[in-house]
Image 1 (cartoon, rainbow, N blue to C red):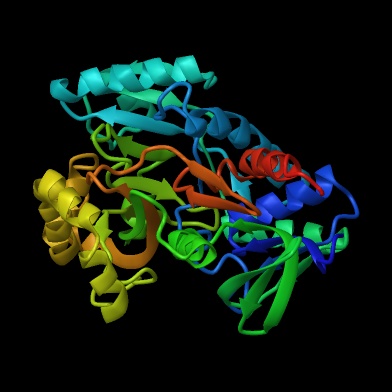
Image 2: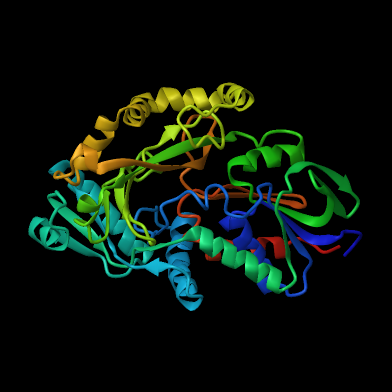
Length: 405
């Protein structure tokens, strides 16, 4: 092993890090691999705070890494959950044009979906939409029958069990604090001692850019992870009973967010949301959560101000929906007009790691960079959970390319 205790150390025990670790061990049996997770359990952040949707790949630019890995990853995720008796349902989805102005966007989504190889797409006119989802308002829709829902935290725990079963190790409560070169190895300094590894895969999600900065001594050029909180409501039983599947609006093509929508949960009930508001700390799940050091670093990044200048109007609208329950409900009523305000009950929230370029643009594809013995997975937002099996294989192949000498 060239002086290293481990062949690969994976930083981050979310679904992407665990998917990578699982794929590495499947590709190279007997490899010594350790996953380092700072929380007491895996799947503590993005993996355990999302809507559980298995995305199909209709939205993503054809030819992009997102599109390619989502379509294949979705099929594999559905098969994986069925094979292992993990919670799964396939209620399908409608993407709804609420007015004629949104119809052009719906046609573009259909074009992308067909080009990406999404199966079973069917355009619905107003009457066909009413037959499928009688309480949903729209002038037309795209039916995506292969959309599914799962429990991604359960999937991540299954990955972790597979890793342990073939000799890998998942260490929780182990936060990475720094790195140092040591001949043919990297010394990973953690709160639970040091780890010496031949390669390090950075799958730290909300802290991926910080881990990259610790590894190189400087922030990754021209990019920074900014946290966006998504807040959910839960529908009261009467309103939840109106919906047969997932219901989405036509999203704004300028943003990598899909707009407030309705999502049945695999364990029961229906969530409504999320919005997308800037969080004041990387793990800021509550509205007023803040960390002064993290906030200062955010405000000191030029890309933050460029983003604010570029998208201030959209940002104000999202913030207003966060502060005003009435505004949030009115957005939901655009799809479900019969919804009464008292039938939207406060729910949970999640925080999404979004890579923002120095010019203020939001990176809309996955971003992976090799830097010597480090592989940095800098941007893997939705549909990363959907595509985690396919992402794992792709990243494992990149790790295998590293010279052994």
